[in-house]
Amino acid sequence: MAQSVVRKKTYIVIWGTLMCLTGLTAGVSFINLHEWSTAVAFIIAFAKAGLVVTFFMHLRYEKQKMVWVWAGAAMVWLGILLILTMNDYVTRGFLSVPGK
Image 1 (cartoon, rainbow, N blue to C red):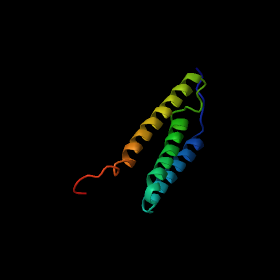
Image 2: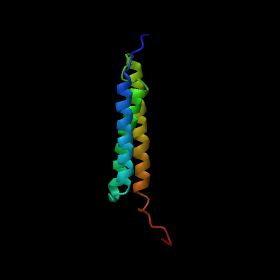
Image 3: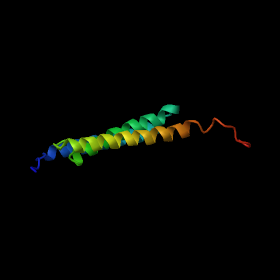
Image 4: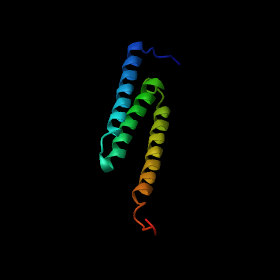
């Protein structure tokens, strides 16, 4: 298996992008977006995770299709978990609780 050579500049650019996205996450946390706060935070987190998986874990340079299948399956499973979690979170105020 041949190793792909990645330039140091690529890592520096990706690191800078991750730092900018981290700053964006911190900046957005001070803005009151009401029900969109969680969605915006998740979008930024998915972008950061995608960059880490693609470049730092070298998935971009992988030739085997099975790796991409497993990465896709992991994303689908993560999506299912997030949907179920958000379903629980959104419906918590649905039933009235005495004393609240």
